[in-house]
Amino acid sequence: MTGIPAPRALAPAPSLRWGVIGPGGISERFADAVGRNGTQRIVAVGSRSLDRAEAFARRHGVDRAVGSPEQLVSLPDVDIVYIATPHPSHRELAELALEAGKHVLVEKPLAVTAADALAMTRLGRERGLLVMEAMWTRYLPQADVLDQLLGDGAIGEITFVSADFGFVAPDDPTSRLLAPELGGGALLDAGVYPVSFIASVLGLPDDFQVAGTLAGTGVDDHAQLTLRFDRALAAATTSLRSALPVRAVIAGTGGRIELDPPYIRPSSMSLSTRAVWGPDPEAARWTDDALPGPYDALYYEADAAARYAVEGRTESPLQDHERTVGVIAVLEEARKRLGAR
Ligand SMILES: NC(=O)c1ccc[n+]([C@@H]2O[C@H](COP(=O)([O-])OP(=O)(O)OC[C@H]3O[C@@H](n4cnc5c(N)ncnc54)[C@H](OP(=O)(O)O)[C@@H]3O)[C@@H](O)[C@H]2O)c1
View 1: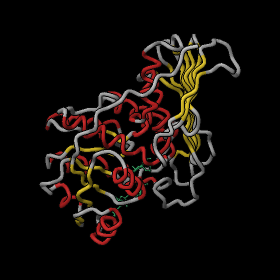
View 2: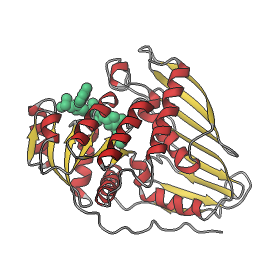
View 3: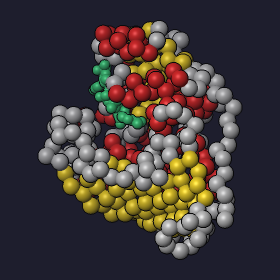
View 4: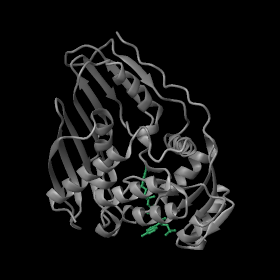
């Protein structure tokens, strides 16, 4: 039985000075995470409302609060900007920050359309600045464990990947999840995780099929994609009205790796090198219990972004621009085929 390797150790990341735009739900968790872990420092926060920025700054011990994204990106002591606003504003805010000479870590999905994502990545390249999608799952230690296993051919040729992410969203048509003008829909909010996970294992698909349903607001609220690769298939499921398991499986000609729910955060996995179906009592297991809370793990992506920015990279070596844009192109085409708004 092949064992499961430990994640490779990383030197402490260089400490950058961060500005946050959009002091909402995920920014709260991001600020908590980097405040408790790693080497990054949030020095400023920008909101469309100075009051909200000041309240966030007080909660997180941030020195500066400003009342507009424009003011935030013009601060000379900010090196990198974390953009955590609704998806349709990502491109405009990222471009604002890049034009001001700041690196950007942009919440998932990087953009709503592939054309927008491409424009952002091109601007970053032109300016020699990092543009990175905050796909935090890709920067977890378990992703490195998986990279090592797959690189070693632990389960032979990979022939199938399945991954899901979905949940039951509150039935509020004005919410970010359901309102078309806020970039609502299961595919953009949650489906980006399984499609991105599949792409991290198999690359971009040759083609795909999709089935799905629409919510009353016209956004997609349930979708199933079958993705075809040269010699492999993958299944991605997402939903805003199913309590999905949030599980991922990679199957090959020589065994299977199963990531336990919820694999989008620090999780555990098993490796079976038996090429037969059913439970394997001898499967190797690995659990990531390094951090006290699941959202503490948001600091890994921040540390990674700081490393890449200081190394002079304009894209993440773990998820390059082509892959980021390609995943968004799949989500965009799937939404189009479903007739989603
Ligand atoms: N990585 C993760 O686990 C994770 C989890 C949740 C969400 N996200 C992503 O993070 C992003 C934000 O989600 P959230 O749940 O944090 O949303 P949220 O709680 O609604 O917060 C978004 C913030 O953006 C600002 N904002 C709202 N509309 C805006 C607009 N049109 N233009 C500029 N700023 C605007 C608001 O701050 P002000 O009004 O004060 O400016 C608001 O507090 C989304 O892209 C989502 O996909 C990621």
